[in-house]
Figure 1 (cartoon, rainbow, N blue to C red):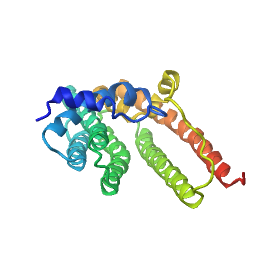
Figure 2: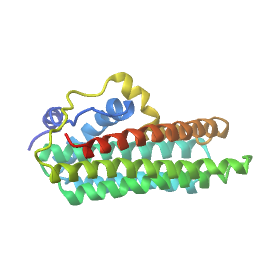
Figure 3: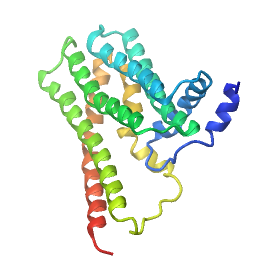
Length: 245
């Protein structure tokens, strides 16, 4: 039986490109997911099973945001569950690449969980804010807006990828722009506000409204700006596909 250390060595050669990856996902989440993927491989788990465990951790954390008392211990528990769920979300992909067991059904399930958490985590924040002892009710628009921003961002990423794939199928002879190498460290740091991992860590401060509310609000505002920039870039890239060469 192959040991975890041997599988870890194999996983280092089964990593996807760092292109476009924010800092937390690139430097923290993927390394965290590697031993989890190795453990899953030695246990004979499938990528779909890892996805299900990831979803269980993530949605347990989201439920905890909405339902548990606002306290330091619940904030730590929430952050741990969300970080673990996100690491397992990386592990399922690493396991699929390692074993060559990619499946469309598995990718669909992974995307379904991602779509659900993108919205529900912010609705859970809204429920938590309702339990803060003193909070301007007008601020409740922030998590509601963040939910809309996150959902739109996720749809935009999935839709532009799907349309590019359709274009490649319809125009198999069309030249494809080469995308070599990874993303610079500077770019990874600039887009870190859009990294779900940063949001997971932020929940350590959920029990401190004076810190959590302004930081969460600032994160929502930056994500709204990043969405506008990304949407313009996606639109230009799709328009370029429509332009005859």
